[in-house]
Image (spheres, helix red, strand yellow):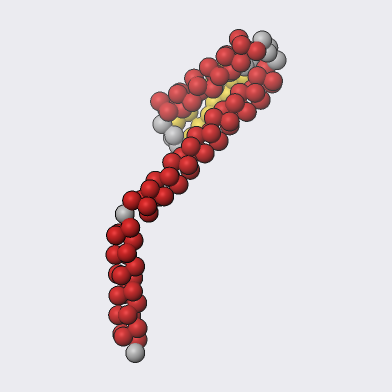
Amino acid sequence: MAVIQINILGTSFALKTDEELPYLEKIREYYKNVCDEIQKSDGIQDQKQTAVLAGILIADELFKEKQKALEAKDAAQKNAAESDPLAELEADRLTKSMIEKIDRALS
């Protein structure tokens, strides 16, 4: 279990988790960088607004990455099905063969 001290936007607290300390430090730094960038580029100085906007921006990144992963998975599955029709035929043949053997065993 790791404990990390968080000091961001005037808020300070300790966070205990099962994650490794180097990983937690990366997350803390990433969030701090997003907050700093918001304050610099948008001129927002209110800490609550900065924290909420940082959360929204990070959630947006997460959803976009999840969407990319789903699209890549769908494309890979489509390509696999399209690129190897013989494998699909072989899978059908094996399935039918297993069903026949099960039917014979049950008779």
